[in-house]
Every structure is written in structure tokens, then in C-alpha cells.
Image (cartoon, rainbow, N blue to C red; front, side, top):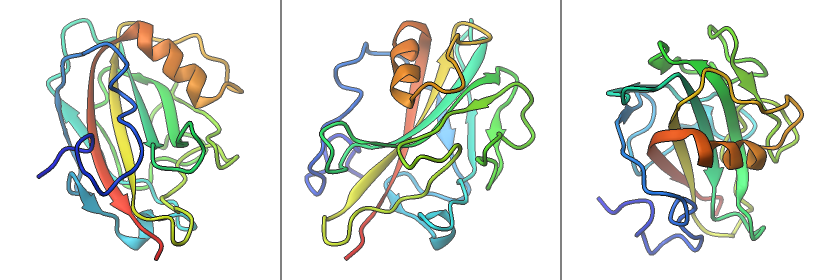
Length: 179
């Protein structure tokens, strides 16, 4: 399988290429095969976040952040579909549908408002006829228990903070097209 960064079907850049190279860890989903397409329930309008489970976090992980970015959106900056931070380090998975306004079952986590204008997971919904888009679910191992990111911050502000506090990152991706 081609990686999300090397698949010629997608026009956008690899958003993680300009960031520091970090170790990775295991990330899987019961709902999405890496590089696969989404079930209808995970698409925009239904907005049911997929299951994500991770293991093998590096020593020094104090919290987790999860983001979902569409780097192929016709914006010049991608489109943030999900951003949640301050997930306790002992959490090892998010259940299907956990990504609402609050992160179901996870005390202390903060979900930010994404580019859809909603707080929580917003499913894939590329413009009709624009071609296939990638959706990159990145799980970040963070070296502090709580990132100092305000609740009204954008996912881009979270990304800036993650640059300085991530000690490992791994990406699971899927794609969708509205023909």
C-alpha cells in the first residue's frame, strides 16, 4: 500500500513533512483500514468518529492529542476535521462515536472547534467533483499532562503547540470522494 504522503491520486502536500521527524507507535482502527475508504456513518452529515486504538507510546508520554486533517481541501491550508487534546496518557483508545463536543468517556480532554465551525469530529465531505481527499488521523504522544491551549483556540494553534511538545506521532488515514 502507498503511504498517505506518496499516493499520486491526492493533490495536497504531506502536512507532516516540514515538522520534526518523530518516532511512531502502533495505531489501528476497528472502523477504518489504513488507506481505505470510510463507511457512511463516518462521513460528513453523520459525523460518527471512527474507533482509534494505540499502543507502544514512548516513555515520557504524559498526555495524548488526536487530530484529523484533510490536506487536499481547496484552501491552501487544508481543513481541520477534528482536534482534541489533553487526553490522559493511560487512555489507549477512543470508541466509535466518542468524538462529540466532549470526548465521551475521557475526563479532562478538550475538543476544539474545527474548520466546520463545530466542536468535535466532522466527517469527510469534500466538494463534489473535486476529486479524492485524504483524511489523516494523527495521534500525538505529548510530554506534558496539559497543553496550555485555550478552548477557543483553532486546531492550528494546537498544531503549533504540538510541534514543541510531541515526542512521537503516528498517522492512520482514509480517503473519500464526492463524485
